[in-house]
Length: 248
View 1 (cartoon, rainbow, N blue to C red):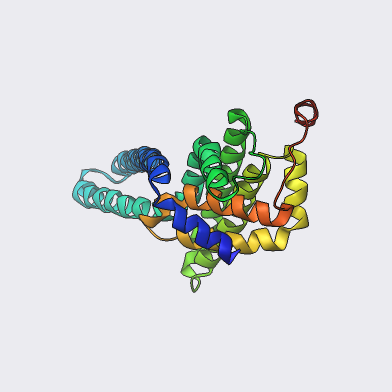
View 2 (cartoon, rainbow, N blue to C red):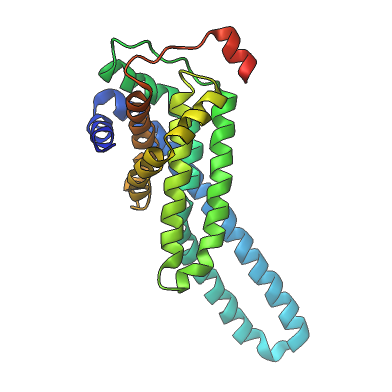
């Protein structure tokens, strides 16, 4: 898996990968900004709503303290969203990866495995579904981990381990689905669960670094293409199209 991680990192800065990188980074930033602005507006609106209720209950004498409290909450909400964007990156990168899985995989296969049969593109609906499921799970883990941040960093550990599991599972199965049915991809992952999960720590380490985590979709998918080749054998045979359609 170290070799797979090294190959993935080495290829990220190649010209073909850079073209995908700019598209992935642009989409990831757009999603983070939209989510951050929407969440900030929601929190400010809730704070204003609470101010109106408190003003009606306490009277005009408390107008200034309440206004200062709302300002403080708004600033805290902004800082919290900035910090939260780090924890939400696994969800964002999972969704972003859905749009570029085949483009990334094809570049890796062409550069490193030219003698092997190329994989077939994963249907966009399937890749989007996998990305959305992983993103939803990542958000759920984030919400669970936040309260534990107050207990000696337990929340950060929980976030890191969960990110390793969720992202490794998604990227490996998407890489495997280029050569086998979704059911077979899941079975292969379970057969090599330890290796796939361990590889996920490389992805989790990357996604934990602000700014650098924007390349996670490229690194994660490229790494899992290499890992899938190592675990499944150098010449993966494609299943018949009819059988593949029947197994979906």
